[in-house]
Length: 241
Image (cartoon, rainbow, N blue to C red; front, side, top):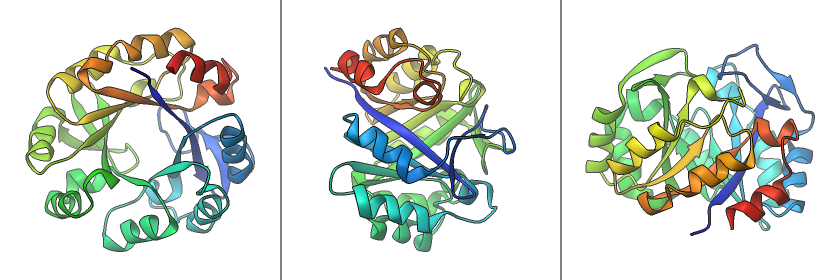
């Protein structure tokens, strides 16, 4: 089975950035988000993972930049939007902008009733981000604890969640390798598909994730590894095939 790769474009204050362990203030600036997204599309990306960090942290939003990216590139690439999607208005804004899929994080922990209703309404156009420290979920841009991972999954499975985006917060942006044990644990407990996120630093990490394909881990988000030029997207796509 092949692995779908989603190069990430994280937007803060109108710029493409990468964080260390998701911490506000740890940004490395990589310039224009549109340029970054264009680079990945031209290198062969079929999906882009687009994150509004200001919306996630509650420090504003970058909707104008995100809409511009979708407007210019949406006919060439599928775009998954994430960050601060917590109510009908923010969800509708992402879907109306042309997102193929929207990733809900904090709202899944703080407003399960609403989350259940949008999963039922939109099906596989809605994924749930599970940002984890140990087996404890992190919320509000990772600054608050959000409950037990497996209890939350049990509820989300019961309302038909079709995809989880699983991030080990301690590894995100650290180039320390993905948490394969966590990915396996999640995948073994659900019928939903799983996207791996955080820590990927070398091509062997992608090979290790690919070995979980039979359990339903079918995709991976690439962030720091691409921006730090640990490998090229073309090399990664070759491995993912």
